[in-house]
Image (cartoon, rainbow, N blue to C red; front, side):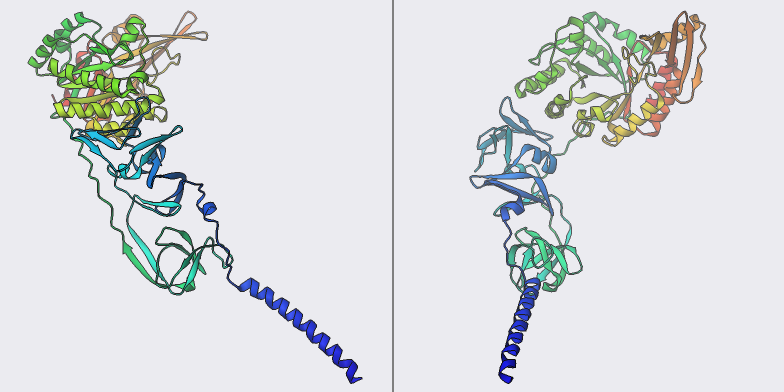
Amino acid sequence: MKRKIIPVIVALVLILLIIVVGFGGKLLEKYSYGKELANMDEYYGVSEGQLAILLQDDWLSEKAVLIDGVVYFDLDTVHTWLNEGFYADTKEQRLLYTTAVDTAEALFGAGEYSDKDGSHATEYIICRMQGDTLYLAADYVKMFTNYAYSLYDRHVQVYTQWGEKQTMEIAKDTQVRQLGGIKSPILREMQEGETVELLEEMEDWSKVKTSDAIIGYVENKRLANRQTETEVPVTDYTADEYTSVSMQGKVSLGFHAIGGQGGNAKLADMLAEGKGINVIAPTWFSLTDNDGNFRSFASTQYVEQAHGNGLQVWGVWDNFNYKNETGTEVSSYEVLSSTTKRRKLAQSIVDTSMGLGLDGVNMDFEGLTEDSGIHYIQFLKELSVLCRKNGLILSVDNYVPFNFNNYYRLDIQGMVTDYVIIMGYDEHWHGSGDPGSVASISYVSNGLDKTMEQVPEEKIVNALPFYTILWKTEGTEVTDEYITLNNVADYLERMNIVPEWDEETCQNYAEWESGAATYQIWVEDAESIRVKLSVMDVRNLGGVAVWRLGYGTPEAWEMIASYAGS
């Protein structure tokens, strides 16, 4: 009997042992640390030649590239994250960077750049094309940008901001894992005494960054000795100061519309009307072709006469009057997107201005398409360098700012130019087919507030309309005609119309029927001008402009003079 029981007991013990071993193996497998290594190419999301970009502590979707041991960022990445000042002319294969006093230029594929001090060799190719993408050497970008970068095996760490950070020591040999959990793939072995930056602390694990900029997770029990460190900012680059030429007191500018040489003879009449102005801006110059040439109605006698009456003269350059006069198509994009043509125009503007004895330049480039925006801003930067060098005031005419025209970049204009003139009208415009006010008070005040978010208040000049629009609606057809400030009262009297004050627009409004037509007019007059000036006054702007001389009334000009302190 005993002999029969022993084998049974042995079998049961063996079965129990197998169960214990199997269960123990499962426990061991569950609670032992995983040894799987992470696929680092997948972790960084890179292929051969690419580098992941860690900006501060965040991975960017963009990738850098490594060519001949040199780190390169594509131009869009540079613009988005590092410095939007770099300008690429893909037609002429040039990379430009314009400061307050100079432009540095490098040809695509070249190992040198030039500026006002001559040519300078670099130990790397400054910029190069790969397919349709332009890449800039990280070290060249650093010449004009305060940032730091460090190159590692598959990634580059970039810093553009500095502050305080929390650090901890590795208390015992361990691993940085891809996620929190002992089975998560291993990113890196860590040795006791190494320091990591603490990014996020959780219950059992913490998110850390290693000294070689690997971000992963370490068990809290492996961390010790928390410290706070103050990072040292990179200040290798000091930007040139954008100095401005400004007038004493407020600008009070009257635009003088001149359509031919004969218009210069009207100066005395304009001066007699424009009480209180200290700047006159004749519309003398207009682009005539796609090569940067322009026509001129300028007169030195006009300049001398204006100076003799104590006025500055800012010549107006536009991109539309010649086209309107002749029907000749002129492409602003073709001029502005070519470095050669753009420079020719900027130099011609300054040379012409200096030759005439002008005090300033007024740029009135309207109707620019969005793809022209970056080229227009580069043009203004280059023009500003020349104007600053020659003591010319540079002012630029702009639409009231909205999201759809933000490519005019008022923020950059406010930095590089002396005055930003907001054309505070055309809320509803001639030919729009949409009856409404030329410049309601909310349109003006909101436009100024948006401008002040981007431009220093002392550089802002608001242009007032000395005209209104009479709207006629007959069936579905809407037509309109201009009526000037000095004619609107007579017109309404002849039509036996008495307008009433509209508090919403802060204008006198009239509407009447004649036959099958409905007429509407939001009147610009002394009352509406007074309200606009009061809105401007509380905002402490740099001045006022008027479109245009020849349209005003004595009462309106008295208010302009009072506002400007004349």
